[in-house]
Image: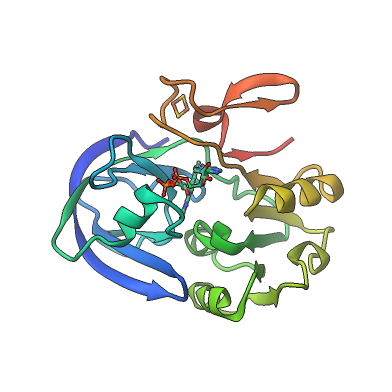
Length: 221
Ligand SMILES: Cc1cc2nc3c(=O)[nH]c(=O)nc-3n(C[C@H](O)[C@H](O)[C@H](O)COP(=O)(O)OP(=O)(O)OC[C@H]3O[C@@H](n4cnc5c(N)ncnc54)[C@H](O)[C@@H]3O)c2cc1C
Ligand code: FES
């Protein structure tokens, strides 16, 4: 298991991918960790860092795909090349890779961890769902993936006989879990620390309260 580190890292590139922003950071001494693990990124001007899944890990870099939904993610998406932020990770539990016939599934920004996951698996089929053609431009990060756009639902386009590794909005994850109880699903909760100290991310799992940052974010029943 990789040991998390906190480092000040520089932005090496910023690219628009449809409505999302891919921010590349100089990797320094940070370990990319397992696909599905996350990092806490300092959001300029905000008190708390924000959790982001690692999207790509090319040599010497760590790249994060950002959906600017609020002040923290907007500040991160507005970073410029050469600016530096504190980065802490890798954190949490990622996907298990030793599964037969993996199928990667994402909805919207849930595509974020899948490019690194696909690389670690040596390639795997993927089904991606987006709300518009513009959002679907992000599918370029996962060449060869099948893409559906609303009103077609990604949950209607999956082979449930395969081992599903998914990330996306909660209704999508719940629908997958109902038909594939052993799917590996990456859940979200607001996170302040990322390592079990603040109890800000407590969720109910199997009738127990757990801190998602250390029990997850990837859970499998
Ligand atoms: C483990 C993990 C990995 C993540 N990976 C990515 C990623 O790769 N790319 C990406 O763009 N986003 C990712 N997110 C979500 C991202 O962290 C939040 O969107 C971000 O923290 C929101 O901060 P903000 O200041 O921009 O908006 P805020 O003003 O804090 O929030 C905007 C809206 O989103 C809601 N919200 C905020 N955080 C969450 C959350 N974690 N779950 C559900 N609703 C939330 C708020 O209630 C509010 O309605 C991840 C979250 C987790 C927990
Ligand atoms: S984010 Fe602090 S305990 Fe999980």
